[in-house]
Image (cartoon, rainbow, N blue to C red; front, side):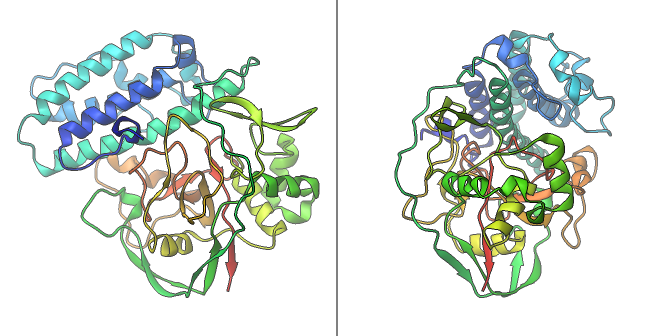
Length: 417
């Protein structure tokens, strides 16, 4: 991948990091028309141009307005229009209705980004105190999160189009057998989890603390589409004994009988990808299933989902290397010969998203970034094929509601030793 594709922050030159991340967002939006960038296909997704504007709003609101003397807001109405969930900042436009924002158009959003980028370049050219630098760094990692969301959301929007258009032309994964799932063993005992180091982390990765684990092992690769097909063929979506009560109720209410983006045609199962619709390859990792589906599959397969502490304890022994965002691929790939705990698909864990012992949100509005969501969510680990490279780490905690299917979610089984 090129440096532009990785879009990771280096921490060496914050100005260069700023330009790299900001430009990559525009690269991701460039294949999309004005109509593509305005559509909102369900309440949980957001239009592409909203993502572009919101991450710009973050720098304007939390960096420029308090930190650059004489800064003139691009449009005062944007303060509420592109506020996501920061109640302390003020009024917010309802998330489910972001698709009705036909104006500003994509060119006006581009002008907004240029206005803020020019002011940020001016600010970053001065000597800044550590708190300001920290907010800028948070804003860059926040934008990388929205780069992933942008791709998740546009995939859902394009899948709802009867024409089934592709976002980009991408490489098809190789056909062939997937390597057998081997055991990645951990002896258990007292371990520490949570971020450790001098670089960036989100507040929900702190504080580092001790946990006690029993011996366990994880599979060396995620569950494949072929294995999921066996689950379907064995009546996995029709057997209430496999499901949590809330999961079974959701399956019945939503009519689920396969992962999101799967369909059935005369020649077999097919799936929709960011490269358009194609046949399923049995050896590729299965993705786009809810926590409920992941948990039911694990029970059917005789395993379980790992806890987040188990996943992190084992992942900390491996380099944070895997297949992340590559514009030539944009889909999980069949496992290689070298096991990796990172990339391809986010891995559901059995852990509910809750604060670590001693957690305290940051003061002020930015404290709403993570802490307010610590209820009714499940933790995912490892990053995926649309996560910018360099963005994740062993301690990184992603989270979604248990019914969410549009993220690039997958399954890695755990087993008691």
